[in-house]
Image (cartoon, rainbow, N blue to C red; front, side, top):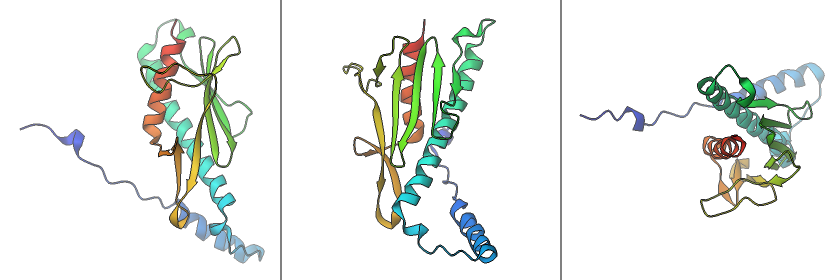
Length: 180
């Protein structure tokens, strides 16, 4: 009998954040007297909230994986460890740094998050997308798509993005390009 536990699907955790926010909003409305009936229909408000959540999810995943990488790679010399920094001291962006290479993740607007490498020579380039494709002098853009019932999905070249796969792809490229 084979161990198929790794293939069993785990139920997706239920997101209760929206209902908690709704309850807090109602309490604030009662206390302040200010009523906002349409925020749940305002695409700009929804995109703002979603983009902050998306960039936070990216940063969290990068932190988890870089911490694990640094632990396995640890030596007495920490010069090859990956470091994560906020760029503008806001929640809008962050970067990974190692051996003079930066991976910059920035929220350009509520509906666009850009990801690019910045080399020590000042060159900006995007990650390779396949074995045959060279790195190009540009950034990749992850764009929000507002669907039915204001469901926001994040897409790259029109395809829905999986956060774990995105982080894995860029982190592998970053580690390979920043190795000495």
